[in-house]
Amino acid sequence: MNNQWFAKVAVWMVVAMVLFTVFNQFQGAPTAGATAVAYSEFLDKVRSSRIQSATIQEGPNGTEITAVTSDGQRVRTQATFLDRGLIGDLIAHNVRFDVQPRQEASLLMTILVSWGPMLLLIGVWIYFMRQMQGGGKGGAFSFGKSKARMLDESANTVSFADVAGCDEAKEEVKEVVDFLKDPSRFQKLGGRIPRGLLLVGPPGTGKTLLAKAIAGEAKVPFFSISGSDFVEMFVGVGASRVRDMFEQAKKNSPCIIFIDEIDAVGRQRGAGLGGGNDEREQTLNQMLVEMDGFETNLGVIVIAATNRPDILDAALLRPGRFDRQVYVTLPDIRGREQILNVHMRKVPLGTDVSASVIARGTPGMSGADLANLCNEAALMAARRNARLVDMQDFEKAKDKILMGPERKSMVMPEDERRNTAYHESGHALIGKLLPKCDPVHKVTIIPRGRALGVTMSLPEKDRYSYDKHYMLNQISMLFGGRIAEEVFMDQMTTGASNDFERATHIARDMVMRYGMSDALGPMVYAENEGEVFLGRSITKTTNISEETMRRVDAEVRRIIDEQYALARKLIEDNSDKMHAMAKALLEWETIDSEQIDDIMAGKPPRAPKDWTPRNPSVGGGGGGSAAAKPEPAPTAA
Image (cartoon, rainbow, N blue to C red; front, side, top):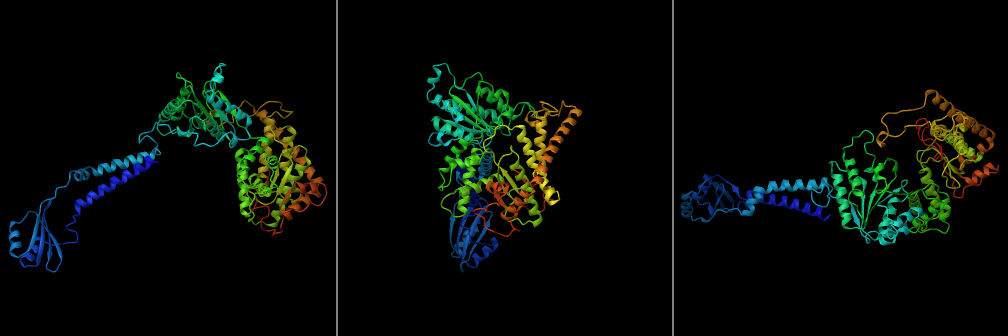
C-alpha cells in the first residue's frame, strides 16, 4: 500500500514540476497585465512625452520593453536588438528607465525543460506497469515474486475451538501441529510427518477455516495463497512464483504453506484439448519438483484444499507430495449441533431456541449453510424489531434457505391457485402413504424461488445410501402432482416438468448405474460421461449395443409406468383426504406436518398458530401463467 501511494505521489510531482517550469518559461511576471503595442507606436509615445517610466530587459528572443504611460496604462513592446538612439530619446523626454541584464535559466530549470517530458513519460509508464501487475511488492518488474501472504500469530485468532463438526479431520491436522511444536516425539520412533496434506470435501464444509485454525494453533509462520495466484498471462511466471514461495518458506522453516483451491493449478497434465507446454502445466511441474525433488524441504509442510480431487494430477497425490488426504465431509447431526452452538454465540437467543432441534431439521447442510441459517434468523428477528432471535425466526430462515424466498406479491388467478393446491397435495399424500418416503415437513402454495409451490420433505436421520424401495417411492411421490391435476382438475400443466425430469433421472440411474433391475442385472451401462476439459476422451465411445439400449429404455419405461399406476391408485382411493388437504392449502396457504397428520387421520386440521386472513388473490401459490413459465415447476423437495 505504501509503495502504491509513493508511486502515485511521484508521478504527480513530476507532472507538476514540468508544468510549472513550462509556465514560468513562457509567461514572464514583469509583462503580466501589459498591453502589447508596436515598436513604432512606442517611439511616438516617447517622443510625444506620454511615457513616464520604462523597463528595458534583454530576453532570449530580443529586447523586451515594458512602460507606464502618463495616464497610468501599462504597455509592452519588443525589439530584435537594443536601439541605442532609444536611450537618448528617453533621456531627452525625461523618462525614468531601468536596464536589466538578461536572465539566464538555472541549470535545474534547463534540465527540467529539456528532460521533463521524457521523465513524465517514464513515470507514467512505470505507474501503469505497476497497475498491470496488481501493485505487487518488489517493484514494477516483480513478475516472478510470490504473492503468498505470511500470517503471524497476532494476525490470526482462529483456533480449533472455532472449528466444529469435523472431529476426525481435526485429529488428522492436530498431528501436524504437534509435529511442528515437538518433532522429536515422532522422529525418535522413526516417524516422518507427511509433507503434504490435501483437505478434500464439498464446498462450505470448513476446509479454509480448518487451515486458518492450523495457523492459529501451530504458532509458526503460515504462508497463504490461492491456486489462481500462480497463473499469469506470461509463460514461466507461475513456476518462478512457486520457486520464490518455497525459498521464502525455507528461510522461515519450520512453517506451513496453505494453497487454497489447488485444482486451479493442479489439474491433470495433457488432458482434454490443451497442449502440454502451457503456463499452468509448467507451474504444476515446478510445484511437483519443489515438493519432492532432488532437494528436500525439511520443515516445510504444504496444506492444500479442493472440492475436486478427481481432476488433480496423479503425480500430485503420490506419497512424498500430498501423501495424506483429509476428508472434511458434511456434518452429521452431532456436528451440526456443534456448528450451530459456535455460530449462536454471537446471536442473542430466545429461551425457546434449541440447537439440537434445529440440527435434526437441517440434514445435509454444510457448515457454511448453518452459518447462513443463523445470519438469516438474525435478519428475520431484526425485521420485526425483536430484541432476541426466537425459534420462529430460525424456522422461517430454514424455510427460506430450503424452499427459496416467498413471493407474496405475486397475483394468481383462482383456477391456477386451486390447481397448485391439488398438485402439492398429491405430492404430500403419496409422501405420507408410502413407507420409504421421507416425512413430509411442510407444504405451501406460496411461490418460493422459482417454484410455484413446494412440498418439503426432511429425512428423520442422515442418509448415506439409498435402497431400491426408497428410490421407487421417490418416483411415485414425484408423479403425485401431475396425477392430482389429471384426477381432480381434469387438465395437465407444465408445472410437473421438473418432477418428470427428476423421476426419469432416478429410474435411468437405477437401471444403468446401480444394477437395480432384474431384467438387466448388476451391470453398469453408463459410460464416458465426463467432460473433455477434465481429462476425459474427446470422442464419445460406448460398448453398449443398440439392442441393449432398447432393453434399458424398456426397463426404465416399466419402472416409471408401475410407479405412476401406484401413485394414481393411492390418490384415487384417498380422494377425501386430497380434497381436505387442498382446502386447507387454499385457506391457509401453508400447512405443516401436524396439520397433515390431522388430515390423514380423518380429523379437521388445526389452524396455524400465526395465521391471519388476507386477500386470497394476493400471495396465492403460483406466479403468472404456468404455460408461459415452464421452468418454475412445483417440486417435491
